[in-house]
Length: 319
Length: 319
Image (cartoon, each protein chain N blue to C red):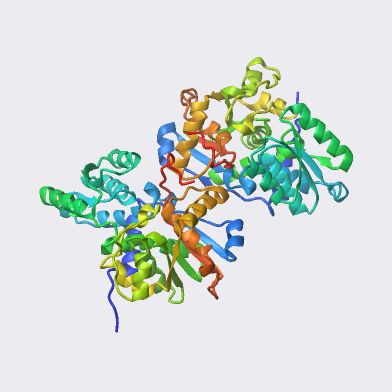
């Protein structure tokens, strides 16, 4: 029984062509110390070096550059407190259209400034999901702008998959790929690209123990929403969606859950040893490849890890 | 009147061949935001990605790998509280010989642990230059080990010059190169390599205002020692030396001096915008290219900046 997902490899390849003039082809990096600690060869795909400092630019750029001229003229609207807000703001600026961004009033000031710096309009809302959606609905109705989902939209999934397309071109054969899972945009794009390019490639997720909805969903074989996320990994405090969950369900071999302590120590380890800045959400995938659970998996010699982003509040470091 | 310096381009090329099996060929990076701020195209040579996290490994590796087997068997001795200590310890480990490292008792614990981790013997001394030299002399006499200078030695200068050899291969034509100046090992190696490869290439130094001995020396046309360094840039709290000063005197067009405030803000800027970890000494060169003095120089479109290192105490960040 063939299953149709929200995106396939052709969509990812089309996204790659579409975003090529705007997105960075980010480098891969390796580190002998980390290899020794992991007991394997690890290839890091450095999306912290992507535009706006995170992979999110890939999906937002694909969605916004793919709009018809008539749709684009209406502008775009989204809600996000973090990297997706900046990604939509920058992609809209590059397209030359309006961006309306709904941000919780609790958002970090530096992130709000970045979004305003790209020329977007910022609307404040309360931190609750309900408040965010209400303000988003209102702005959409008032402006006629096109909604851009942070993760649960075919163009977003295809765009995020382009990181894996590049990683496999740069690193050659991999036995496994590890990414963090929040809403599942990065993981579902990764899974689509990787499984079609190399069906034997093992796809492994990483989640904070304090936001382990995808791990519980995978264990139960059915979607379970995230209710009370408690994690420093601010990019991963989200349930998976109607498009991302089926892809994760069918392609992800396992999801390794990570303690807050291990997130912080893995983040610091990468800063110290690799001299690159990664954010807590990215450290979740690093912690996964250093976990006993992952070390116990046989037949895996070379692993790709997507470093999802590097946007950190340097005034509030977690150590 | 031909002048003979401690090293020439041939020495730098020989060093490059000697260290190639051990040192990283570090990447270059660019950043649109920094280019816009500087008003020029800036190419960063990322020695924070070098082994031990700083360019110092190049010189130490060249000096130690170049020893005869008989000399190498005696072991090596040096004094340093920072990156040179780690560089000598690692190079000695790779050569399979003893390393004796004299470190001030005030040295940061993490740096001492790193040196011990490479299998070196650590000897404590007081923070004064006199105490360091006394302990160094004693250990040299007792062990017969070969002394490796942190900067004022021909093999060290030639080794540091290999960063510029690579930078010019990677970046193509440059109008200017900027490096920080402490003892002058990096700057003199840079000047030797750059001036012989491209006599028109302008060589510009950067120093903290609180450790501006090279700037004062250049202004006076004669060597002036550093007496009371006061700067967060711990790699630059040193006078130039008998080998490095003449090279600096004859090749460096100007030395831009940087306030402590600008060192800290430039360090943070690079962390935030480029997502790489750089140490205060490296930030001095970044601040230089962003200074009004540098912006006022005409005829410079493309500039190479050597990011000297990325070893930072994450428990004591300067903001």
